[in-house]
Length: 213
Image (cartoon, rainbow, N blue to C red; front, side, top):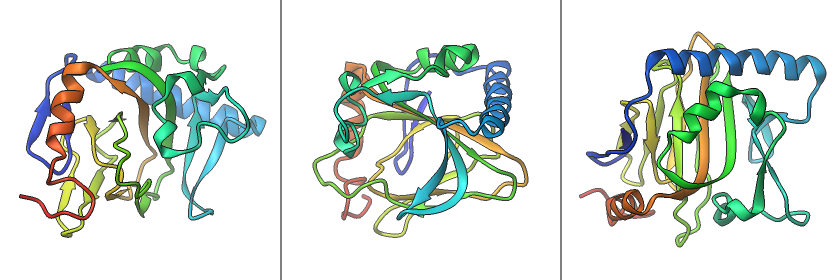
């Protein structure tokens, strides 16, 4: 089930991912982080906000395939024509199985975020473009990774399930955890039925600058 944060709405899609798969995805991700860190791989990066490093590490499972600078705009994150899978993608069978279960017609940007023990992700907005409604699935492997979204009326919504979508123009962050935590964000294009329900859900209560009904 895909939960929409900030609204009492559940979009039915694939069956709930079982615990064994979630744990396997987490284990292979944490192992990959150690390997990439030891080799100083360019596919492992420090997460930055306002060009300042903060706690999380990010692994890019997709790479931009266009001209220099293409695919960087928030409106392009879900464009599959501008992204290819990175070489790492084929090394993660459980993660591939997970992503293939998401209700996406096309897959573009794939980003794995790992918060080290004792860290969270500071409150931030991904963008503030009024006409850009990003289509993506956010997935956590453990309840310990607590994503929350705060709208412009200062109403907070917390993740209840494992898969979620939220309006990335709203402020959001991840609480600190005593253990490393893993999440995966996959941008792309939702399947038609999901898109119809989803876009209806953010009018008007999740639109930037409006208050919840």
